[in-house]
Figure 1 (cartoon, rainbow, N blue to C red):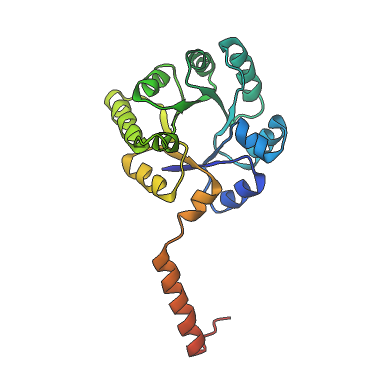
Figure 2: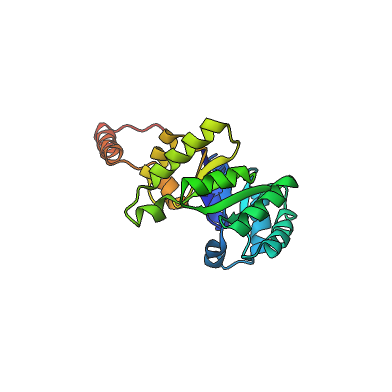
Length: 217
């Protein structure tokens, strides 16, 4: 499973990228706002930093303006994936952009039917939101499984990009189900390295090394 990092913070992306933990980046207007940066400026910087796809989201809601914005974003770098919402206007924009050879990430997916429409419209990525479904006492991971089954049944090329990831457990479960990509905030990717037994074992090793006077360098 590929890892995309869900942030517009350059330092956080750079750190994970240096460790080989970044296969791409996803951004949205909320993350751009949090970064305090201009969308065009920060998107160009991210695209220059990472080799994989960088999702940059349109802000319009009508198809014509979405398409205009999408073309502008796609022109920023070769690794841009234009992010559009899963609305009828977004699907129209997805079809137009994908027909032109532009990568498209269709976001805010909450049902298998929506994912099926996105694949038919030529989406490069579909972004089902796990955490937001969990917030409604629905199992977001079930949606990933349903989409995986449908896409495998018919050989769709659209990548399942699990989004709205809230925990390290979400990451491992998505990998087991067969999501192609999971996009997560830096803190969640860092949390994947944590385990109470690792901490306990390390504490004991450090204690024993001091008692034995072990020095390596």
